[in-house]
Length: 95
Image (tube, rainbow, N blue to C red; front, top):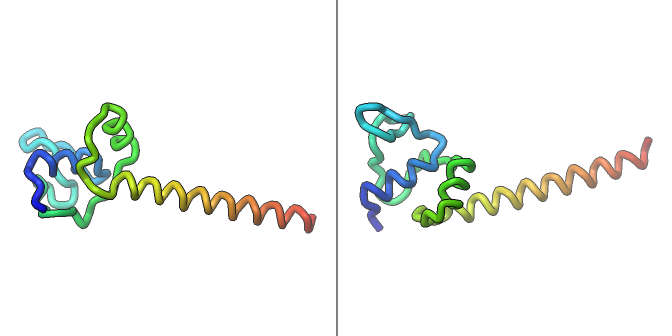
């Protein structure tokens, strides 16, 4: 599925690797050019703050997997916190 130019720029707007070029507008900081990917950008990395702002404004999630990736990452972080707290609890018994 090809994404048109506007959809590609919407994806770039919530990527940490974006930058602003006064002559070109939003460009990739890696290539210094407008997006050229067909389906997915291999260098894409979600900017959680920009994504949250865009989501709160009711912008559609045009990039399948962004919200799922954030949900999965949050779950993984929660699992890590639980494991750390269990480890701390175990250590407290040996003091």
